Length: 514
Image (tube, rainbow, N blue to C red; front, top):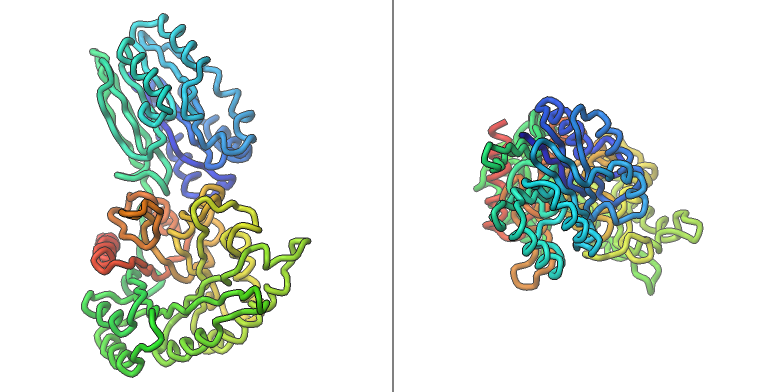
């Protein structure tokens, strides 16, 4: 007997994301392998919307084999999904041969009294059983965990199959095994490539797992620069950044002075030596432009103007600048139209960057992020942390300054898109690729990881693997390979020097292999 599990995909409302492409592949692969049953174990949507649920069902209609569905916690984030998914949730108990497949609903993180009673009643119907659900036993609430573990000790359950954790794990419980799989999400599955799971039962009731990986990386070169696109962005002494870049053999670098008193003449000499050695792509990361509530005006323009002059002296190819640092609501009036603050920032951008663009350099506008837990509404979050606002701001700057193709665009920070308050789930990274991809003029790539001491999610950590936690770069490689996103310079933005060098080596080897 063969079973395929599809889990933890996290579809948004869009159909042009890496996740949507992965689902189409999974359906086709399931049809090719023709198992006895396909089990879809939850989190098919990222925020439980009706549109995302409908998109999943539309693709699932192409399955040529029997399939069952049980929801995950993501389906409960919005009231829209469950009514759409209800018609495919009727098969909670399925018999195939001598095996009974049971699908208890653990989407709330607990086993309700109703689900427990149902399991007890159903478990009298067959000698061999398999549990298909979303939550692993150890992630359920304490009472549910104690109950299910005790029940599993008493029952002839061959396998308890779940998802939710985004990594693979197998362990014995009673006479059976609990298998947790990493799932299909191109942005979250870690420890290995995203994919589907093929489980085959032998004559003794033992289930053997085979992971089938989504083929996401197919064509990485050429890039939009005439050398490797991999480099780094270092927040520190720009002279030391140039020296470190030269020693590392990289051709892409971004200078971001930490202090005002850097040695520009020495930096020019070091840059000249670097350019004598190789062709380079040089970016200069500028300070922030911030809204002063008391003065009702923009502050920081003087520092930005001085660094622009220094960057031009260094013959920078591009300047990176964050979107305006201001509360989102302050940029709009009560009717949702751009307010006075919008015009103030726009005039400031025009004064700073019109000559830069006219001189042939890029202005690459970077997205910022909200703190974990920040609501998605405008009064509580930062401006342009929502994709539509971000694109509207880039369009507004383009419209005011005027440009040739590719002179003004998006500097996309992947980690900021993932670690972005409530918006991190509402607009997954794949939505950024689909909506912003052709506007991208540069990238910041790094990992988001809980701090070792505080436990708080922190940006700018090293990427230990392409399939790392919290951001898996499988979706990035797919979007890059398919040219959904521009093949612009990749600046590794990792603060700790040793971590930065490891991450640079990882991506250099990836592109060298291509």
